[in-house]
Length: 190
Length: 154
Image 1 (tube, one colour):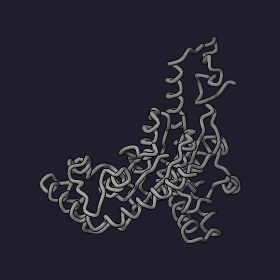
Image 2 (cartoon, each protein chain N blue to C red):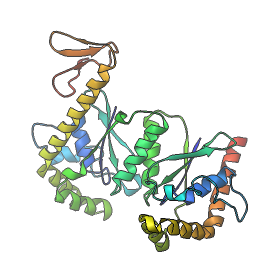
Image 3 (cartoon, chains in turn red, brown):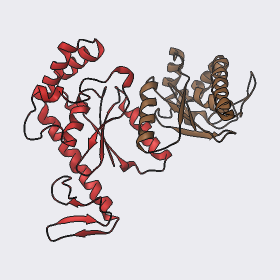
């Protein structure tokens, strides 16, 4: 399964959400400005790169997580992704899409416009990061809901294959690579 | 290879380009009214943008597709190319953008087509207006086919 967080330009909201998802940012506290600004793709995507999936890492289920910019036409872009799945006869639940833009603070949106559109990076970039801090718990909520959905889908997939439940409630498949713990979103037992 | 003809709306310019590519229509005044996508045009007029639709396979075995891009052709192209790579496909995808500026007249026709009463008139008006676009489409398709021929020769 592929996890996709999308926003307007894959520079801020989707980068934060996907970084949270793969564990690059903490889930128990608001990160410092320095931590946000240190993210590889934070406030970096140029207009000419919007649409390119940015790989953020693999999560606890070993699923790859991407940040994608979809401008203001997310439905059109999502249809393109899903019809590509159809083209290769892949099931639609192969991709889990989540809109990260709805969690963004006004400061992030203004900062993003200043930094990305007008090139005022010194003013715009810290403003976007500040906006992220102010709405950070919204992002945590979003990521937790996505991880919960991911867990449901992954466990459903496991239903289709031989699985073993041990006395601690841990589920493992005979695939080996899919050894997972039932409780706790995506905690993986290797 | 997969070749995707794209435009603001997926109908009629990309369909026409695909037909020229597949040599289903030829000449300066082609009759396309009886072909699929045109004989039942009102089914395709409001076909959602973003969906990749297969039209046929050319003589080299290239699959020909159409897509409506709603003016974000670059984003659509990068998303499709990116996910194509993520899915591990070795198939190359070539986009041919026919994004001429969409006229207000065209947009008005599309708007009118949303009402059943005006649908047939809107289709007729669009089909009449695209006759002016034929030279542009033929040129774009010829260029694409030439590139493919050269690649084939290699």
